[in-house]
Length: 360
Image 1 (spheres, rainbow, N blue to C red):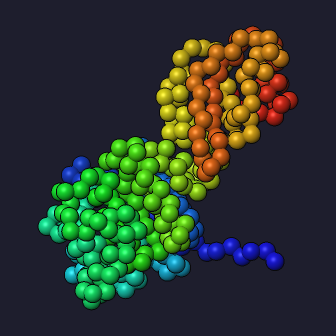
Image 2 (cartoon, rainbow, N blue to C red; image 1 turned 180 degrees about the vertical axis):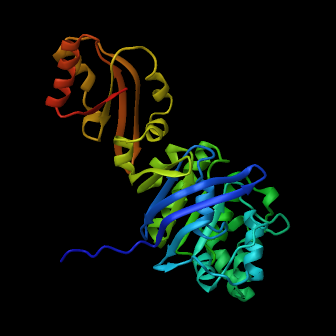
Image 3 (tube, rainbow, N blue to C red; image 1 turned 30 degrees about the vertical axis):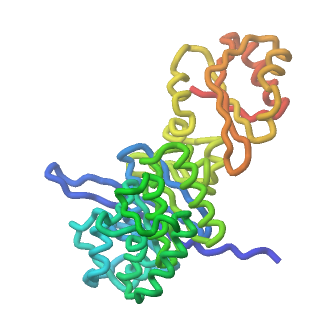
């Protein structure tokens, strides 16, 4: 029997957001359409100012969209007009968006309780110790003290901080602070965990540990994780699918392996190729991007090409990464200007079925 496809846990339809400024309206998001499936790790990547953080705040209505619809578990959050509760106003203070008069409803409240959020700067309460910080969201929803403390202790054990419960944020490292923030975000058993540049303030080793923890939470607890970042390495490390946002629009969306192997937009190429994209502009010779998909990456492709075609090849950039446990990579090469020799190289790559594209 064919497995029935699950409905998306979050749908964004025609989502738009404008901010009023002294110089007129500024468009942060324009016609965003996305579907995020339950249980996946979904990445949203873009350059600074592309609209990533605004997008994640629109998902849980910390920012009210100017247009379009957010649908959470089949229920639209648009058009609600109840006043915010005291608890929600406190949550907005923690998230740094207390100045906005958000329109709330029971549906928005339900969605918010089902979405934990972690931030780049941790946003812990300095006057509360680690245990009290994790208990805070439980206090807001009326959980009794004993139950809240028990839940907080379980979560702190999960993130490896059971021995730091009485410590205060100022006594913790950056990685420890983010672990506390993750435990706090998980306190109310959310179905979705929103991560807004959650590793940007951390060193590479600590980043790797935090990403491993997020992957563990996703795998063992079934929590849908949405990762907002400007770092392709973060997307490659843990995400199943990714959307690239550029100048307030979604440029492309798909499986991480597909986007990495064959980016279809200029911004996709820039994010994936990085410095190599700049090197393409150097020189006037034709350039090819050879794509390794996990099979060819272990083969001496260039050596065999040179031996078979008897032409000089200039390697401009090469990189291989682990994407979902599979070796993925690309290589930029310059091929001869002579049309006959260039065609010999292209025909050889086609014959041995090595994926490539001409880069202009």
